[in-house]
Image (cartoon, rainbow, N blue to C red; front, side, top):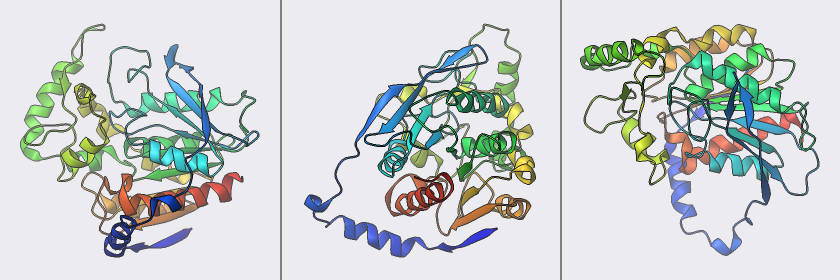
Length: 326
């Protein structure tokens, strides 16, 4: 097991301020890539996907990406994808069934076990493409999908060669205990009403985030951090089916940890308001081939922007280069 000492945010913030005075004429040229349609079938439903191919690279290794809880592939993942493409990797991004332009009913249902099926279908869909090297395939997840990729890694060691999971949701029960107690009765009421809906009925939805009230994600950094990921004009997508309340406690990716044999990069945030850091620390020793990085002073959403993003994405690029080649 490889460990990396945590780092503090203060020097990184200083570095970020220095970048503000950087001469833009010296900046790296824009990332050069082409985007191809890459939709695939999961459980008889079409999932929307796109494949980013770096220009000038023949049959590059590929990294599969999808977002976390209730989010779409276009919400804040571009900077990661662009950095991977710039490093010579192809990138496949997809949306789960029921989200974005993917098919499937009911809409906007978050269910870890069902979404793992979409991950497996996405990986399988790449096995017969001639424009990438399917023998050098990695998967990348964040938050809720960070837990999902750990499950996939345990199940597809022969196909997936490396997995990166940042601030992963590894134990739904532990995360549920972080939910404000004052909202328990309301959450149970909405979830029960949704669970009892007949097939074909519109779900009972609850907001993903709220600045001053009940929401699926309730932590000190949630409203601002998640809100930064949502593009202008997409605010109406701030909802998920309430039934997740009953499925979340039983989705526990940490149980897959002892079965993961492929190289794994695990990145955790010390001040994570959604994912108990203690649970991740307890899981790490159960993994046989893990590179663990703990971000001191960072919260759940620190990784998407600024100097923390730079530190994280550089580590991820190095990890994938080492384990997928170039």
